[in-house]
Image 1 (cartoon, helix red, strand yellow):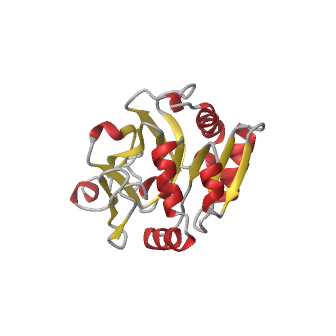
Image 2: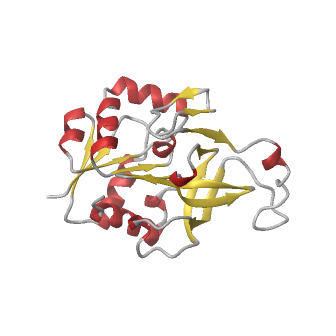
Length: 218
């Protein structure tokens, strides 16, 4: 049985992720996991996150699940979603928060001169860009990956975020979007795939990505 652990440390849309996974993989054993052993026993792990980074990292640490997530990142297929993707990096500008340091890089705010200079220009030149970035946006596949299987390049996915991951290593980026500036929205290395957007809110393409994850054997 394919057992999928959704890491439930108190800061995420866990039930929405679980419903999407059930729809994408009805034969999988999908579990909301609040204890480390359940995560260790699973064959693959989904690591979501939602909210402010300082709260997410504090809650993860207090939950006792951090070590199990770090072990999963070294040993089995792991899918990071939204803040779960950001938490994989070294540090975040949100509260100057140290993160898991699984991937080298920083999580940055949509701000600064490069963003301000393009504030008058979204997809619609009369639209002001706002933070947080909310809504549907195209994702460009910068590298081939099994989790992109059956998903057309340039497909729209649903985003809700004010911060984005900036990897130190360009080869980590497998997907890119654009909001005032181009930004990394999907990263991958070995057994890890992580996205800034919400597959569970992204209709059929999101379900396809979850289905690809369930079938993925890195």
